[in-house]
Length: 124
Image (tube, rainbow, N blue to C red):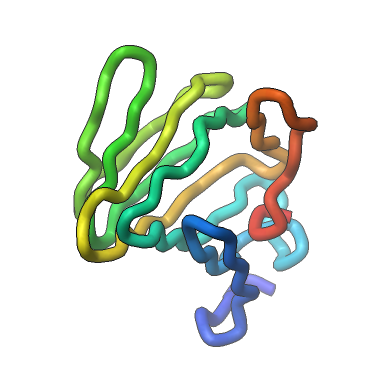
């Protein structure tokens, strides 16, 4: 189906964020997955990487990203490109949620040190 209505999109939740699954193979896309992420205030997400490039397009709020020896603030209107196999950590030290649309090539796997690779349910 070429149109995924927000009201019909699958929703997922974990300890630090909520996800709205938009484009994914289970919803008709063949090359890219896209989802909306909301990172809760006061969150420190665990460091992880992906085996493919991941792009965050910030919609509202702000988050802090640690990558290599650098720390970035990503705010509404910004785009963050995370290279494949780059370990990074996201946090939201602010009082309001951070929201973004995230794009990852189909089949991209999350890599958390010490755990087997996963394809997130919102990207399947």
